[in-house]
Image (cartoon, rainbow, N blue to C red; front, side):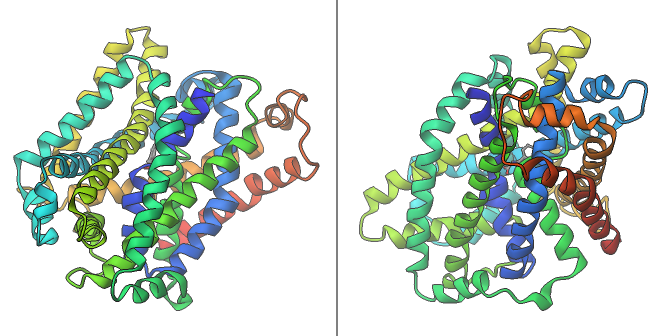
Length: 441
Ligand code: PFF
């Protein structure tokens, strides 16, 4: 039970609450959401299941898993690509998690409720050199400590009790945001898809966001699935996680966009800071007549966001820690410290790329932070996704797939499940991902 809940904890995180609104805002709103929904349903569920199959079949880290299933063939290289990808994601994700931690602290000290210009507050903070860097490092050290101690208990408690609480708070905020003056325009932005806005780059962004939000294709979920027991129903688990994750993302859209159109100084395409400049005004607006409630609710909300981010950073960290630990028979502490050190070094660069390193543009005019973001979600994740689907669809014997889907024949699935899975993973996934990827090139 614990590890299945941890899987949900990996999926639900800043990808839903921070990245989803940012991507939706930059890619035209409703039409983006339609493509996103198609991606999570048609590709997300089968690909998450495929990763579960690899992990649970082998009960080992991602590189050894490919080696075990296809000895002396180069498939294991995707395992390394996946580990590189989670390292890059962990680095820039921790910067955003650090910002959340800062908001949590400021909510605690009461500073946040006194902020009158949220845009300037966020810009001053994220653009400075040292404070955001310190928060990034602190967040990584917290992740490190949890990883070192073994993951399951704490995460289980979070996912069972606190995730529902987060959902309730989010629903409240969404209602509050929709009641703000001028919110209707935001609802239109979300609910009336303008399909003329769909370009290859919007398709690739939606695909990348779907993979990112579900943590798929880079070995993280297969690492968690290596701890699954033999009675965990893989398809059902994938469907539940995808459902929950999508719900959280959509609610988050309903929190952010009505407010964005209501408070006028930022547009929906404001980029990585979008959520940070919008949330304080939502709290101020909803609780303008009840500041004490505002204090309590905002503090609780940011605290829950910190925990949601933590259950995701833990899952990324665990993938690489498990690899070093299994592979080189070193202590967990030592294995974990390799990943932590790498993430602190790279994460510091990402953090500085909003301040002193803002003019350093290593890739196509993008800052380090943006480059990490693009390379992972728009390159490594889709390409690894193609390999994953071809591997499970064509390289693994069908018998293995059937055994895993049916828990060695003990689980009676409706008849359409196995053939649909095979169709989606053999044909739809690789063809759709490759076409989107190539059309963007
Ligand atoms: N899915 C996480 C989120 O939405 O916040 C982020 C993530 C976790 C991405 C683990 C990739 C990963 F391997």
